[in-house]
Structure formats: structure tokens, C-alpha cells
Length: 99
Image (tube, rainbow, N blue to C red; front, side, top):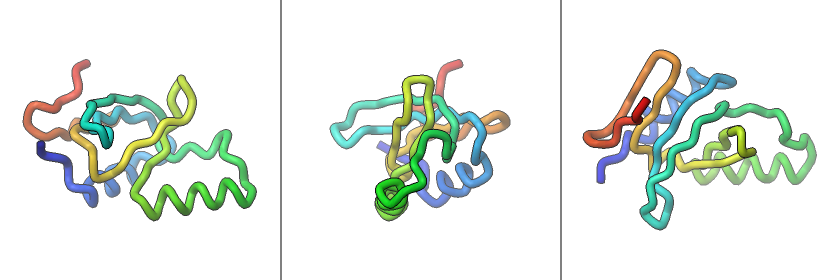
């Protein structure tokens, strides 16, 4: 299965900080999952030692937090199949996101 290049994913996410994105990705068990939410929203993240440790761990392991209507979810930048932003739809063959 082809994934979007993690550097491309990171660059796109950098352009979308605080904006809504939809991401389709593969979980570690091979299951496809799609989330829509705000990228790098700091609302609800505690600005204490535990919050900083969590943020550092996420960054070290390429994990991106996403604030969804169901709370915080996360995905790995190296497991992304498709992404949709307000003005872009990036995907690997057969993995586009339905409207």
C-alpha cells in the first residue's frame, strides 16, 4: 500500500495549523481510519510538565494530534493515505476521500 511521503504530509500540515483537515490513514493493525478535525489546536492541552512530555513524545514519533468533535485523536505522518484541506486533496491511488 502506498502512503503519502511523510515530509509532504508534514509540510501540508504546517500550512494548515489551526485549520480543519480530513486525514485518511492506516492504523498499526492495518485498519483504515478517517478523521476530520483541527490540526495542532492547543485548546484542551495542559501547559504543564505532562503536557510538554506528551507533545515531545508525539513529535519524536511523528504522531500528530487532531482535535475532532469526539475529542483528541492522533495519527502517524508516515501512515497517511489521503488528506483533504480547504483547497487541496492529496491522495495515493485508490485512497481518495469521499465527499
